[in-house]
Length: 119
Image (cartoon, rainbow, N blue to C red; front, side, top):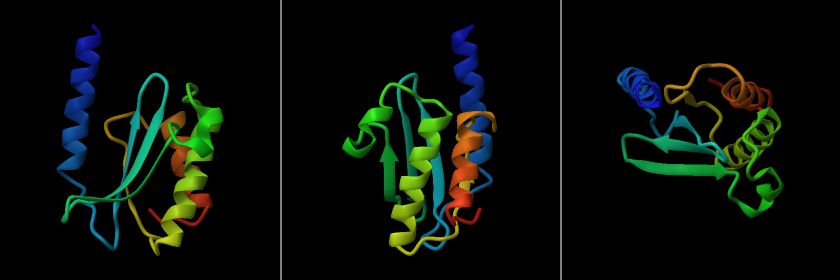
């Protein structure tokens, strides 16, 4: 049962990744959720390079560690938007990585838009 769930997410992930690519001008915002943490990256797929990243494992987000909920997603989105804008990145391509667009993923996307990133 669990194996089927993971397999289906991987299939969705590949289907999404065939349609979107990140560039230096419009990097791909990729999300990964584990049971305890959230990891977010801005990726330039042409060069294969991560432009900036944020996770709940960082010291400044230590109070969010072990709680991948909506409040944590909002905090991560604020930090990510701040770092991206400091690097001159305003337009991005959103990659939900096979996850459904609700809950943590939706909150993260909404907060990124609110802080000035354009999808």
